[in-house]
Length: 487
Ligand code: AMP
Ligand code: ZN
Image (cartoon, rainbow, N blue to C red; front, side, top):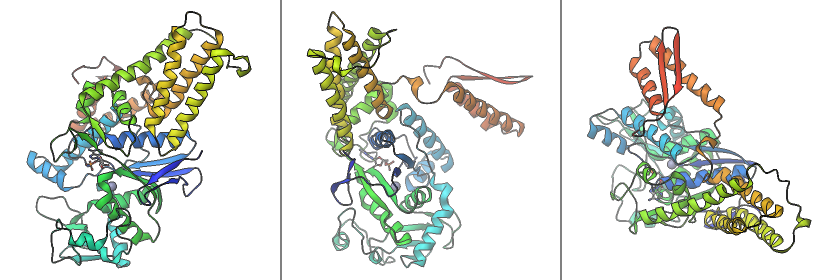
């Protein structure tokens, strides 16, 4: 079976055919770094991480990019409220984001571009929109001329006329059309700004994603993903900008996750009904949080409650215990592979069911990433393992069946990340040591330049991560120490 993906653009499930065979250019909208991300925001980060890794498991070369929005109204507001610089806010929460995704066992994206490092490219893209007749300037603000883009509304299914008559759009006499959105905002006091051909100012949110996605993945992406609240206006506007600039289709498949709800309402910062992901992983295993998301189809709404999380944690532990029991039972045993011809009776039946479960798991994943159906197969396999483990006599064939179950769980864990121990994150000890050495070297260079604050920050952060740096006359050394539990 080939992979099928539900495409928000066509509103149907389609065969997944990337533009270049074997290669997937995948972009997901990332966080705006003005606060810790909540457990609702964690849903797209987790599910798209699994989809990316499943595509890799199926043999695709995947380039996965997730942006960091580090210039935005909410960030400016936060910095002003706290009386600190914008940079301080964005650095604090960008770092927290990286820490949190690591905790949730999300692999770092291949590219993690920050908006403020791409201002020149954004200006270039806006210039292109002027050249093609889709942008206009009023008093240093630059707008996108929605009326000029004939396909406007093709993703969200909204019609320009209906939107215009919508009561929620404020009338701004300076705009050609009330739906026109800002590509560039002129500088206001106490706001960050950059120079541009239209005067000092900062980019609009939508142009950030168009610019960064196309810079790293090319004019046409294979998959563009995000939460369903981003369909309109964010993704609609990204399409309008990108296609008007390049004349090419912007993304082949649009994927959107449903909302995480709490007490029947969408979890959101503005409603104040949120729990940060870091609070949740203090109370529940990060793997249980992953399983919680994976047990539901990514497009369906999902309800959060402490009870559901605890139940999920129990379910996860049941699966983990099966794996541990198998390990204990098979410890030190050298088993060859199963020869199907030798199987008879209940062993044959078990073997055949397991084959079906394994196949079904992959089929569910290939059916628009139906992780809920796929994970169900793991529980079926665990049932068979338990039945075998309860038997008094353990035949060699049953041992081989247990080995097969164990191996299959770990095979799928390459993208589920539910069972592996912390050491199995893919970073080998050698690489880890090398990374710490690099940090120690950077710190020494900073000290030589008398940049004490940054040097101390590196030492403190390493300490928090369980690495003690010791400065001696003959140089600097480091050693791992027990982590402080309060950190
Ligand atoms: P933000 O930082 O608010 O731009 O959100 C980051 C990502 O989380 C976006 O893809 C949003 O669509 C998504 N998101 C926000 N709230 C929820 C929610 N309650 N459930 C699922 N996804 C959400
Ligand atoms: Zn975006």
